[in-house]
Image 1 (cartoon, rainbow, N blue to C red):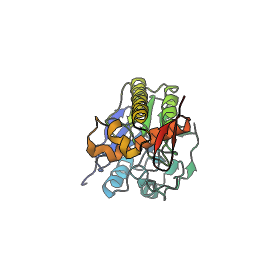
Image 2 (cartoon, rainbow, N blue to C red):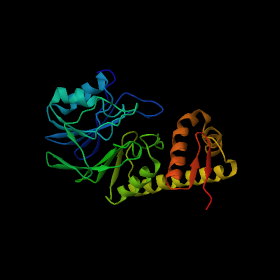
Image 3 (cartoon, rainbow, N blue to C red):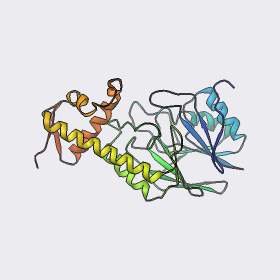
Length: 276
């Protein structure tokens, strides 16, 4: 089967297949996870690529009961319909926001809410609403192992892009803090290898984002009034300029967080700090 991924055991009853969609935003590809033994749940079916769908259906081998989707970006949810049609599995997820990056065709059988529990073959999986990267993002906690499936909320190998209007930096940081209350034992990200020290990983991401925010404030104080394009090379001066178009999304998200908190203001194009 050309392009099909090999199944990799993550823990007892948890297996990963990675979609053949590598790239700058997806790393080695989108991770799809099976949870269970006799009966299975599939977390993030991924892109609707024939080889990947075939691999998922073959691995399920008639045992798939539930398809759980972390969010509706086009590398995570589109295969849900194809896999459901071939297996009869029920689809769970939040409805797609009306923005271009979302899979508008995604139509779950059950619309998830915060702490909605799904049990398949004795394996309980709890949905945790984690807006930030996307307003409809959820992480899934496998209660038996403490594995937290984080989709794009936490990735291994790169930071997460927060892009308006659906992404929100303040919500992202709040959602990261929320996850610590669930005491996950392992993070199984939507892209990259598992993270074995979840609390440390979460703390690092929060600290990194707040350090970047402090740099935004510093550069804005020096340059204001300033446009985003003027701030970008100053705030991300240590980042490869080839990545600045992507970093621009997160810079706007940082500025909008400051705006929400009453710490910055803007005209149509220029930003300034609000005096203490």
